[in-house]
Length: 225
Image (cartoon, rainbow, N blue to C red):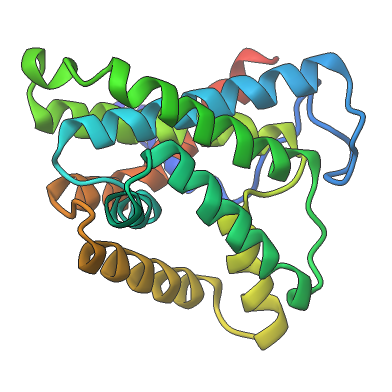
């Protein structure tokens, strides 16, 4: 019985597809979804942005793209939230030659995550005086993964980074894992060169983001039964 329970728990981290629930959009290119779909999309993206903010506040290192955003922000003297917005829009431009169409989720991804980070990074800066940085890095990773799961289930289109990854993989017939590694390695290296914070939090994110997303997908689909 214990073995079976362990196997059931392990299955959570072997999810290979995004579940469809009652509030999932029927198609990712819908620009007028029902209220529940749009509401949960926004909630997921807000949690995602909150997790990114906590990772930055931890000062233990952020996600690869946020390392780049932090580096750019330092070089041109702007906030990380605005830097994230600029980078997201720039990445979206590269969708055109790859013949990828953005969805409402893509647009909201750009807006909500950037706004959340812009507002909450200054507000949560005191967290570093109360909580251990390592704890904040783990918490931030979990929140990013949990928010990602909710926004993926909404099924309203990928974020700009995910779209770039899948577009390159499809157009050039390359494995997604190789494409993702190549893009994020380049991004985090460039961000580090520009002055972004690269640390153990970045490693924690790399290890923990997959299980966090899988757990989110399982929890949300279970609660929707």
